[in-house]
Image (cartoon, rainbow, N blue to C red):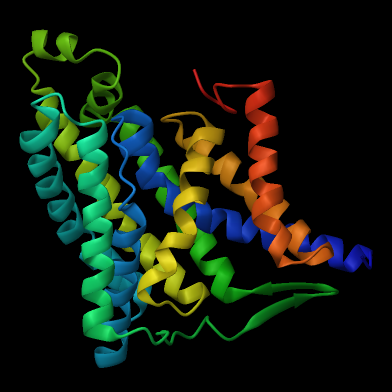
Amino acid sequence: MIFSFDLLINAIISGILIGGFYAAVTSGVSLSFGILDIVNIAHPAFIILGSYIAYIVNADLGIDPILTSIVMMPAFYLLGAGIYQVYYLSFEKRGQESLRGLAFFFGLLFITEVSLVLYFGVDYRYVNAPYIGPTWHFGYVDIPLRILVPCVVSLLLIGGLQLLLSRTFVGRAIMAVAQDQQALRLMSINPIRIKRIAFGISIATASLAGAFLIIIQPVEPSVGRDYIGRIFAICVLGGMGSLPGTLIAALLVGVVESLTSTFYGPSWAPAVSFGFLLLTLAVRPAGLLGR
């Protein structure tokens, strides 16, 4: 291991930037798993779907991938709302959401991945944007814009979601549905409708996260598998249903992975980050900002 102050500072900054991306990737799971208690292991597949839509529009029309993903968010919301309706009628309504519901989302993951492979093949795809190549240099500190831009937009996404949950009627209803559905019914609010809205929002975030992913690295259909464990680990580490906790956990995991990759090698990064997760949960089982 070769240690230098320059490497340390750059590793920390790189970890913070990639942690911002992890926060965007995990935000949807924080809603579906942390609040609604729906184990949507297919979430990374929707992120990859968002990546490929950004790629198609960028390749054909030259439109910025982030702008494309923002325009596509309503479509992803409707997709998520429809998936929840099928999930509710087929599993949750019958009290079979535990194992069979998990198989349902695994099937969605498999179908999405296979469909993308059949249509696009297994070649890596990438996008073009003005900020993908340049790097800002501040002395010995290097900040690649292809990571900085997704990080900044990710922070805006987390901030917007937090304002939605804390300052709007629908957001408060989403938080309440995780605690007491009967109380919502007494207020003449349909908890199923609220859960459908929340799940639609969680899938809508995948559109943005997919654009971030293909900006940061080339993608192919199976790339989403690499993020399944990390996404749920960050969700649990931050505290179930806590978006500020998700952000803090994502930044911590990003920094730990970056430091490990820089000084010990990339192969050690997953082991160290999950070890950090286990150590934190041993000290605080509810997560960093869990209730």
